[in-house]
Amino acid sequence: MDGASGDMTLAFELAALKSLASPNVVFNDARQWTEYVGVVSDKPTYVVTNFTRKHRVRQDFFSGPRGVTESLENVAEQFDTDRHVFIGTNEEDAEIADSTGWEYLPLEQAAEAADWELADDSDEQFFAEETRDDWP
Image 1 (cartoon, rainbow, N blue to C red):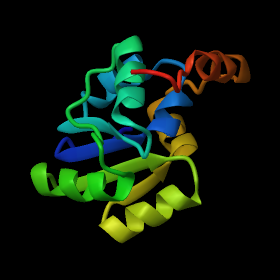
Image 2: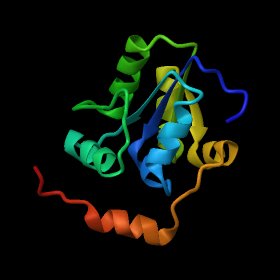
Image 3: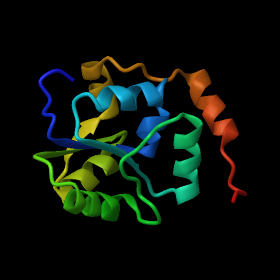
């Protein structure tokens, strides 16, 4: 994402992160031009933690037991940067960004600008099959 400010907090909605071929590569790339990067989701904490551990994603923040809206509000308060950008996948994500004062960036647009590879359908099926609802 050429020209992006280094004084930025970047948040990925979990579904957006799961739609990337190499989440770890994306996070490492984003660290080159952001101050903080993390994941927010309405899913339980263990779902986010399992995914990020499995893909070796080191995040500066995550939702915890909060939903996306409350998480974005808390992150904006804790991480004082010039910009707060939320990468999501749908209109609901865009509305949440707008209501919390974050800039919204659709995943496809972010991936194109940063040259990130999106997962293909077989990758998404692989991730879906590994999801467990009976844990912890």
